[in-house]
Image 1 (cartoon, helix red, strand yellow):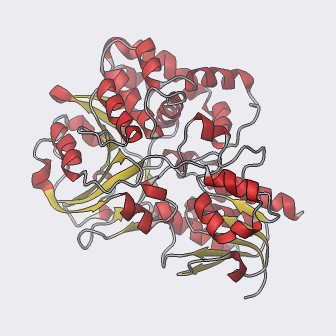
Image 2 (cartoon, rainbow, N blue to C red):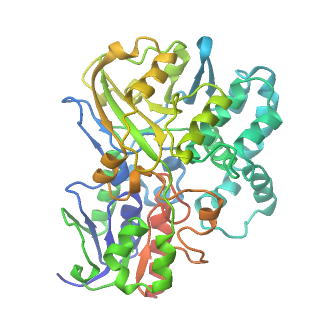
Image 3 (tube, helix red, strand yellow):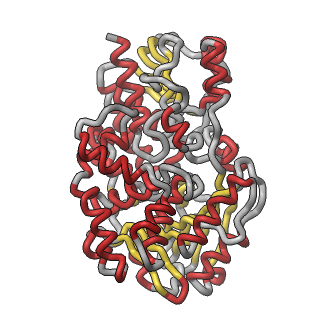
Length: 472
């Protein structure tokens, strides 16, 4: 094959973003994907019944609409359309109650009883300062451009979410809402830094919403593909790269892969000390995922839950904390915290007329093959009695299935590596330039690099910027 300026291995959102950035800078770019279709974590397909379009990876994308990289690429010009549900997140509680994260901080506080004032004091400054906080969240670690905003956010973000909630709140709705957000960390809620995702995701809900892409997550990949091709980039699918020597000569090779795959493909070009550090990089818990074709909407006990595309199922703070400890003990929670998405309430194009889809998963030990269908459906039934009677078809994926579909998901880990405080600093190794490897011209651009998990393309963006700087 002819030489390129850059070859990108892996066509997930980070690989696609890196390819777009490089191609827009005038570089000759080849993007390679092992599967026949692009998208990785932003793929959609009919996997239950004809006409029901399910998201194989992520479903709801607050980081997508907030991403500086996606905004710079102007993906709306290439067909991407965001749909904003009226409420970003619903969190049902027993007895027909529910806490809702509304677009407005004030509207959210009105639902939280005596804890409303404390919630407003917590979240309103973060929303006002979001533009100053966002660089801390979506860039590699560095000294903040706005130290006061950074200090305010950092002091809160360092706390365990259990401590933050118990310090501020007295009733059960607000702690449950914060715990549901914090559980996106995949860490025990008593761990340091679990308040960070709770605060970031809450602030995003108020600042930009939790939107879904019209037509499914695949629409993000399709828009990135159109952007890349418009800049002259080339895509080759169905090519499982075994070794870097089979690739065309290039000035830069960017890997949208796990550290393990980087070692497999290019390990003989990496220093031994660096390979050993990559081998010590720890995966996070896995997930067990269910996709449903439904003959009607989820019958929530509290109909307000139908105002959100994302519903957190887990009950109280204490219940969610117990659930999230289990995977770290190599156990399976009897009453797991469940993330559920119901996109067809807001995007009817994804199912036949009058029908619906739902997407749900829970956290399990890495590599688990235990079937969690019964436990997940019991949690859904707890807050939506009669749900099982709505199911036309379901498809389950355990950790092995997830990794077989996408080898980046090591043991079913959707986070690109355990996002605890140690691997926040050493992601994937301790370095001031984490996207560069010690081997000249080889870069890592997956969620195993800063800023980590989430559909934002920023890992690819930072790696592409590093490669461009090195090409000068």
